[in-house]
Length: 394
Image 1 (tube, rainbow, N blue to C red):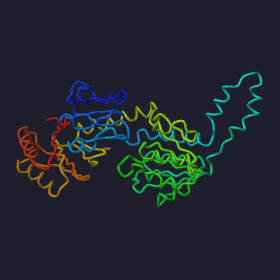
Image 2 (image 1 turned 90 degrees about the vertical axis):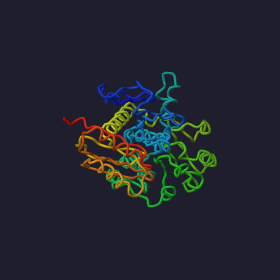
Image 3 (image 1 turned 90 degrees about the horizontal axis):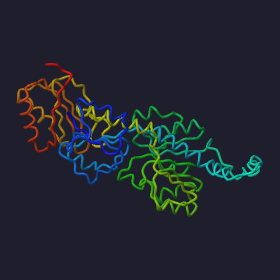
Image 4 (image 1 turned 45 degrees about the horizontal axis):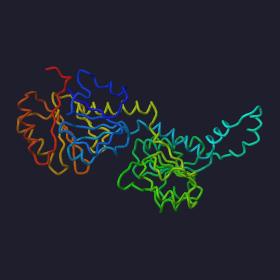
């Protein structure tokens, strides 16, 4: 029986994937897996039992990823599950940034009298806006969200230019060939009427847009941040807007310094706040966590490599270890010395750590336990787990 602990309310469409015969939900303080949304875990003391943490969302800033890695805990996220929700919000705000739709709607509500129609026709000129068609949009970060925005903005008639030096093969195939790729990000800063940023928050992306980048933009440009608040330097944006060399800023991350400025729109973190996105994220997080616990397969992890191998043997040994030379030789020789046959094996590394799956044709519990003890005694091995293939009948 696997123990699962939840933080926050997780959509039932996701939690229902954990069958009651195999999983117990919130019945133990020593869980095998954790699933959460926005709960901050930086002060949480992870029990030794925890094998994995799955976040129902793309960002993992609320999870101490480095701490988890050191403890051999795999951290999962759900890239792309909320992409459509964020894309639609960005497109909506692009439209709102050029057409005073909300202002006009609120103005009409204050009208009265039998001549409302005449009043509207007489004063509607004050709400004249512009069109997006023919304007140039720069998209920084062509992941799941950025790629969708680039494609849809092009369909709205915009000229779209994207920048991402690390775009994946899958994403590259999904981006319209009519979206121009910038070789340098400065091309976006120098030429675009609208700039939207969609990159993860890392040490190297903190304040990715600051004084230098803002000074390169056209005074008529408008900047959008639906990625993470810290991606954009707030003080630099305030100075740019107030000094007139940035026309507008829209962000999904509330900051008191940005409030009550007519050139700045602050939203209450609505990016993934749709029923569909919450369900999609919950289903993907549950599916990923469930597969890892039952088979050891890692997919969509932010701290360990993707490792996927079909499971047809009686038992599988999973090993988290330091990424150093000859570890595979040591692992395989330890298993072979116990007269256990290795049927299949895969290893992948990521930075200082690596993950290995070893499928063995053995059902003797004592022999397996002895091998696990030997592996756990290795100085460079952090965590060893044995998974029984429940699909095999002995």
